[in-house]
Length: 248
Length: 260
Image (tube, rainbow over all chains, first blue to last red; front, side, top):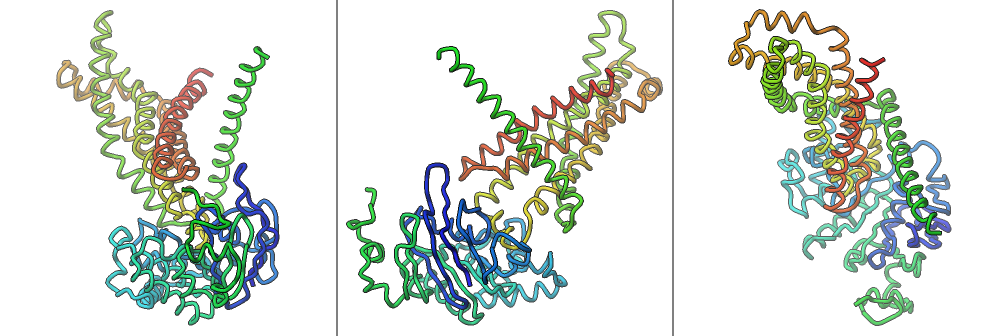
């Protein structure tokens, strides 16, 4: 479904994506792991067109991601941002129903609110949270609202950017389980970027490890522990010694 | 070699300035193009009208009334040196309407509105809210920039008009209350002396200053760097740029209206 071929991206002298090849089949949950600053977020933003790659081809269902109707392209995606990226000036329900209140997917306000409340319920929030503002929510609640917004328009593809960063282990587990449930329930194609190994095991069908601008290893989550790849091995066991240079 | 080093530095600085002018010009053209192309966001526009126009009234009113009062006192004291105290109503009117009204309102808008727009949009950029808008199929220029710049273009001339009236009223209060001017004569002199071109120039300046103030807030916000420092720099840069552009535009417009 999503294919990245020979994607390159540099910022000044810093090469972030050297020659990235990645394929995510329809309905699969792919988790990209890798150290901080290895270009995981850049890869994800390249697919969405938030960052323009220097070279390479990105296709979704065989169609070039950079051409064609941009609104129709983006309407296929939902995204949970690392910090939630909720709009401070809007109450929770309007954040969730943002897409349903304007543009091609516009619905009557009451209907959009009902859908927002239903999605909030789906991510474990009560309807009384609907009229709060994002600044009144805890970190875990903000993640849930971000998740509700990502799924509000029933997208085919959902991206999760560091979904458990900043959460306590119990809340991280709750969010991981929610993501897994929702992805399976919706039959969506998912791409998650994280360096939280508990997220990887909870969410992934397949794992790809990004290091030095290329996919160092890719395979099913079950094959991760006995991959024999020294880079992946060092990363999943959190060892300072190994082929990945750790700055002390 | 010794000669070429400073020349190269000057050349680089000139190129940097030209590049900045080019970027701002393209941003302005892009913004204007979104005034005319749907989708439109009436709720955002109404919110911007309220924030830029209505909420700026107190600061505009206070600035204008104190300036008008001080102007009357200065003209009276200065005029007394050559027995020209009687020109207070005329000079207050022309000073407020042609220059001080639009410039001071423009600078107050730069302080109040430009800074607020830049800080808000820069924070949205730093917290990935701008990226979130894009993923929700919403063009940030249409949703954030166009409504704010259009609202400023419409409301700032009105604020300048109100500021002019309040400023003249400030001069009137001081002149009739403490300087011994007759109320009816003061008002008649003010009305007789002002010409339509004075008012037209004042409102035109207001529109241009409003456009520049909101545009700079949006431009610096959209191009903000990372973190709190990025937001701070964007806010500071936007107010500096707006103030300088307003003063430069005032010079150009004054020349265009009254020296040609």
